[in-house]
Image (cartoon, rainbow over all chains, first blue to last red; front, side):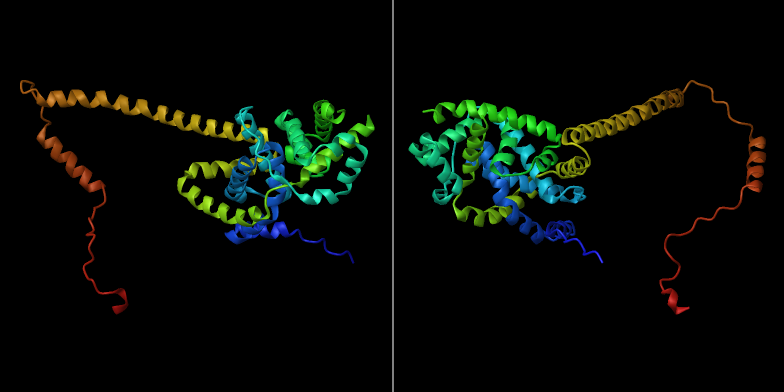
Length: 196
Length: 151
């Protein structure tokens, strides 16, 4: 006899929210805040803007949850809201803004990839963490909002192409071509830093 | 080239270590609830309904198409409503000139008024009374205030 498929806990939380249980939505907020914060923050490079946007994202999701029919996962659905709202925000914000960066977690010193990078690449080894962070964010901000969204989801958050294509509502081919173009641009922006 | 690409990916992954202080996530939910309550008092009902329509359509189809269809639906509904309003107006305007000559005629004291023939009027009234059923006007107040269970 086939085993029953495991029930996605989000499905139950969404159903309870739709039935009027606001505490179920609170659980979804707590569960997805860190991940969505990472998405919005890495697209805006500004903590205060990220906080405001994230508040609006959850408010919009709560207002719209009665229209959510479960054709996609809640995770994909709320990611779409966050990405679309952030892209709209970035287009309105334009170039006039200041970066407001979060601190780098000191656990980075124990990260395998960081150790590898500092061992193999002299610029990274020589640069202090703050400089590295500044350069990375500057390079990211030179990308268009759409390209930044793809780089954030793929390179920083580790989402697969298929999931990103569902979130953005475009084909996987488009995701791959946006990534290719974005990487080429980022490499050009970071070249000066990397070849120092 | 491949090595450059891998190094770039590793560099970008380091951005995961940019984190707000831990207490930020702890207080986020409370801030969300506070903002939500104050926003509920400010947001009009149409905006909430609009968000639900967009969410429903957005789930069925790509976002841009969903917004486009929702906007078109609203425009079509508005066009139909305005068409109905315009269509009903000429009837009201057309009925006004019919009434005005009657009013002016009744005010003109020099006009000779032709009264109907009295015997024929009586005959027609009697004829109508014989055909139409009797009409009773019921009083809205009941005869008795006693409850029906007393029967």
